[in-house]
Image 1 (cartoon, rainbow, N blue to C red):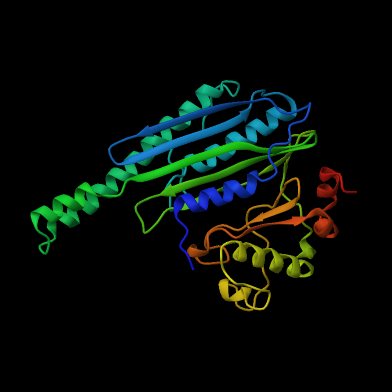
Image 2: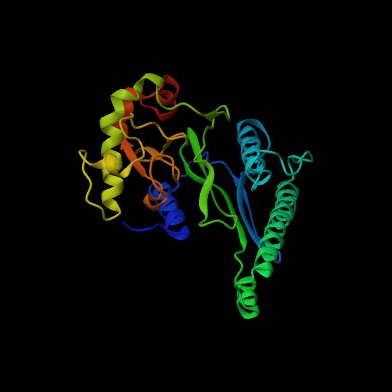
Amino acid sequence: MRLFSKYAIVAAVACLLALPGCNSSNKAIKTVTFTSDDSSEYADLSINVELPASNKGAAGAIRRSLIDIMDGQLAFIGSYEGERLFPAYDGDLDDTDAIVEYYRIKAMDALDSSASEFYEERAGYIMEDEDMTEEQKKEALEDFPRYEYDFNLEKQYETARYVVFNSTDYIFLGGAHGGVIGQGSPTFDKKSGNRIEKFLRKDALEDMQSLLTAGLVQYFNDNDDTVNAGNVRDYLFLEDESIPFPVWTPHPTEEGLCFVYQQYEIAAYAMGMPSFTIPYDAVKPYLTPEALDLLGLK
């Protein structure tokens, strides 16, 4: 059973979400992209942000929702109590460069401050360790793990009716390993600019157990394990519980509705991020009226 590294996890999710490609239409939302890499003595920050270029109409509503996602991720880096580390941007919402630069500077400062505190605390323990030689202490400090945050928010898939963005970040704060966080793949109605939060009916969970089981079996088999409907629960934390819908809202692709479970959500870290796509003809009976309309499946 293999262990998924940072790059394997991120690549697997990115590959899954990008399978259909971006289906550009004549009414594709025009976007602007900002990328940046920043470093301090003990921390690294990378930012990749794609936002609708216009702050008007439905595109503007989508743009503001995405800025809220950026704020929700970057203003709380490493905040275990859920406390904001710096204020939300309150300047000109038409100025993309100013918005992203504000979050870059503030997030880098917050990440650097946290990393510096961690280094000073751990360095103190190392220097006081009487069982270590001076050379060992020097090597331990030189090999000290750096904090890292890779922020990603970009357009992933688009049709004439809706657009899907990808919000998956990598974070490492000095623990045993890093992890993928974010808000998954938020989907927006291009007519209204509203974010679609409910694709599946609340009462559909039990009826969809066979579909969720089949999807998980496919995921684990794709990762070189021999799994079937009879033993798939041996790979999960669920015991006798029903397989839940993922916390991240499933999102539409060209082939069907994509489900992505986060690390530790239903399985061990070594299992990666269980992901699969249920074809539209199979999932259609369980979709909400809003989803059926958005996807043109009525």
